[in-house]
Length: 577
Image (cartoon, rainbow, N blue to C red; front, side, top):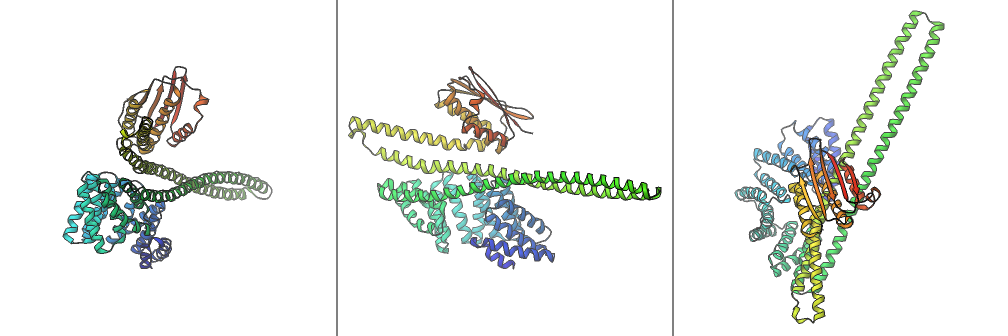
């Protein structure tokens, strides 16, 4: 049965079948106390849930599999379980944990002498560092894997590592070496007939050639990649190739072909955006379910209170009836026996109440934990989506504006009459302004300095950027350089940006100040200006300010507003303990 589940596990279209069969195998294994088989069944169930992006469910099941396999000596299965746990951490944004678990897997493969899988594991660790933009560290791990692959003379490992080290070298600045490694990967994958990997290699080579100015090569690679990517529905690399071909044909002056691939690109983008909207709706559904669970808890507490009142009334009635009966029919000895019976019943009722209260507390804790996990997943999802949108704006719309500028540069200004020259200058100015606004928008969605250096440095750089381009002068002060966690930093950066935007748009100020002050218990951030001021009613209006309140609630923060004709001060206090 486990062999059949393994067979389905390798087919992405049969993951539900994998879960069903593996659950049957798990039930049989537990009934006969077969820990190794139970662990392998849980590995298949958890791995299938991970491939379906059900990371919370996958995490619980995979850790149960890990606890089971720890009680055995089956190291190959243990390594497989560790691999899936590592990928769950990677897909949920915890790259440090992903690297930690991948290193555990590497140690096991070295211990059991499986050097091929050890080389693949080094490549997986390298891809984590590459995804974190740490190309230098990524190259170290890829080269370690290549050394093992060279000793093994294993072309499959070579192809995997050549492709990944090519990307790391290319984006680390050594573009020629990156191109050479990618060509090696393509040659090996063509030799082995690996269509999936050939498609990815051709997509990467298309992008490399376009970046290196090898227009004919970019066209050649792109036209080879397109049918493969469409056949296998590999939409992310397909989107990049379509963008590259748009730029290639614009540079060649073949605007008909450029428009063709631009149309295909936007059709694909619409499909992806529709799927993202569907995922957003699913998140909203999870929030609704959490609120419904909270309501069920409240109703359950009311039922418990009613039952307690009924028990008290019942208990009082029993005492009254027993008192009447004892006074009429029983002697002192009978009364003592009845009292003993009553005390015993009282203890049973108290035990029942304690058990019921414990169950309610446990259920309440479980629901609260689920609610907290949903909120955390939403924060991570929003961060990843902001990064994706920023990247799309910069890479896609930025390339289109750059192409417009390039096309304009080919027009001989001196050949135009005076009126046409005026129009030409306006178009150039407008495209430069659009590109500048695009860069600012892409940067402000999730600035690199916020992710790498933290809130204090990111706000300081934001103030500097405002001073370089705006009529209002922003002073910045801080008594700390510490980090405060991704959740606080992301929300407070967006809140301060909203305050600064309001100053620029509405305050009619000439000076403003962003101030950060940290104590042992809390973080205090204030934004002050010397503008015309605002009332509390005015402050409460607007979509941006509504979003600010939601962000403050998300990090348990408070705000204080003081405004007069001489200016406005908004102070935020965020608990850090």
